[in-house]
Length: 228
Ligand code: GRF
Image (cartoon, rainbow, N blue to C red; front, side, top):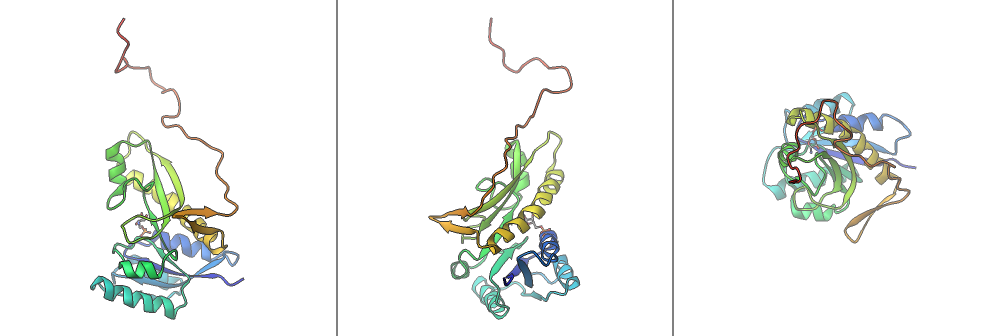
């Protein structure tokens, strides 16, 4: 069967691009990257693309519709089936998103719908959540919104800062994004009434608690004690 043709849009580092490139290096993987587009000429992701022999195109910053029109032309020229946003820092034009409805996906480092927008890991720590993670979703015109396809969870730790939590989330992004693309490429993913259905879905047989057990050190006086 023909491999799904991917276009990757990025603005920076490109570690998710690298994860997709690694997956696509396996001839049995049902997708291939045919185009990488960056809005920043200095994005390290472009170097990764070049090293993998994939044409990288820079479309510098300009008005949203003009930018989207150029992206659309490139995607059509390369017969792209699925667009993967991978650290792409611009908001896409609403008309573009409609034209490419259910053919554009994004990875975001939070368990959406919690913490959309900038610095989601910082937002998660500020909220004191016990679990953080990442989400791959179909893109809609609203930022970090759209039907959720897949999520991965990491536990937060008492000594976490934004850097340590981001690093652990990024690691699971690198597993989740290629897995999601595979599910789409295999034709298993459908949007039905605004939610995603996946054929052959296997959910893990785990429930995680955080904190996960009695602490090692001696207990302190409880914050609240029954008065008697
Ligand atoms: C990732 O954390 C991704 O979830 C977010 O932007 C970051 C991009 O990282 N949308 P990289 O450029 O793929 O390394």
